[in-house]
Structures are given as structure tokens and as C-alpha cells.
Image (cartoon, rainbow, N blue to C red; front, side, top):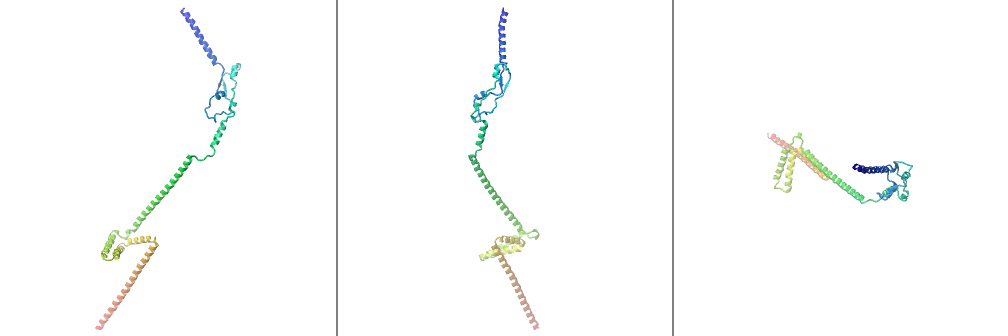
Length: 285
């Protein structure tokens, strides 16, 4: 009895499973059309995700291709499913195409426009930078010119001092000669201490210069050549120096001439006196 009841309950369960399997298989084997893309009718009902100027679909766009998985022309359901989807050219009528919208955008960007605040600011910054660069170049040139003049002055000073020193082959030494010159100047100031202002200033200078020409002749020649070089930059001073030198040389020459004349007169007088004395001595004999 128990086994019969189990048999009665198992048969309806197996029948239900078979019926469900047949139903699923019938749905799976029904011929349908698989679209590669969504149909235009479905796409037109959705909200566009782009701007208004770029969401229009061109009218010459071909309809989406369809791929048939199972074709059964004998059934009216398959003929209905295999029919081509209707196009929506009437919906796109009166709207701008994507190409027209792109041309309008490019035309609007090519229109001439005035300088923006950023452009004006960039121009002002450029002028300021160029001005600062020019001023920096001027300052740099001035510094370079000043350094060049300083170096030239230093070189001139060192070369001048080196040129005043006597050469080694002359045998002249500066140290004892300068001491002799200083002693001569001090002696002149001592000698003229009770005289007038002119003599007290001229006597030490004259004695010092005389001692320098006597003790340091080569050095004094170099000093005189340097003084003459600087005097040539001032024509009036150079002319005065030339006239003074010519006057001194002329006076020295005249002094020598008068000295020789006086020496000759003295010699003649001495000779005459000696001859007279010798004549008196002869007559006395």
C-alpha cells in the first residue's frame, strides 16, 4: 500500500518537469531577429545625451543592418519579425545635421576678435621685461666700462713707476740716492730758515733737485720725460716749460761765455803784469 502511494506521487512530478522543459524549449526555438544595434524607433524615444546642436541624426544615415538567427518563411510570425524596421526621416526633417553644426562652430571661431584682457596683460608684461632687460644691459655696460678704466689706470700707474726705476746695467741705486736728496733738502731749509718766505721755499727745492740730478741722473731723466709727457696734454703749460727751459739754457750759455771771457781777460792781465815785472827786473840788472 505504501509503495503504491509513492508511485502515484512520483508520476505527476515527472510529468510537470517534462512540461516545463518542453515550454522552455519552445521559447528558445522560436525564430527571432537579432539586431546589431538598437533600432531607430527605440533610439528616437530615448533622451539624447549631447547638446541640441549635435544630437541630430543625418537624414542619409543608412538603416541598421540586421542579422537573422533563424529564418522560417512559412510562418506568418517569422515574416513579421523579418520585416525591415521603419526609418524616421520625418523626425529628422527641419533639424541641422552634424556637419552643418560643425561648419557653423568653425566659422564662429574664425571670426576676427579684439585682444582679450589676457593678451593685453601679456603685452604689458612683455614691454616691462624688455624695459628691464635694456636697463640691465645699460648697467652692465657701465660697470664693464668702469672696470676697464680702473684696470687701465692701474696698468698705467704700475708701468709708469716701473719705467721711472733705473735699469740694472746703469749701476744706479735708489735707496742711498733718495737719502742724499732728502738730506740736501733739509740742509737747504736750515740755511734759509731766517730768510724770507720765497727763499725758505725755493732753497730746499733747488738744493734737492740739484742733489737729485747729481746723484740720480738716470732716474731724473725718466722723471723729466714723464713730466714732459703729461705737459704735452696742456699746450700752454708745455709752451711755458719750453720757454723757461730755453731761457735757463740761454742764461747758462751766456754765463759760460762770460766766464770764458773773464778768464781770458784775467789771463791777459796776469800775462801783462808778469811781462812788466820781468822787464823791470831785467832793467834793474
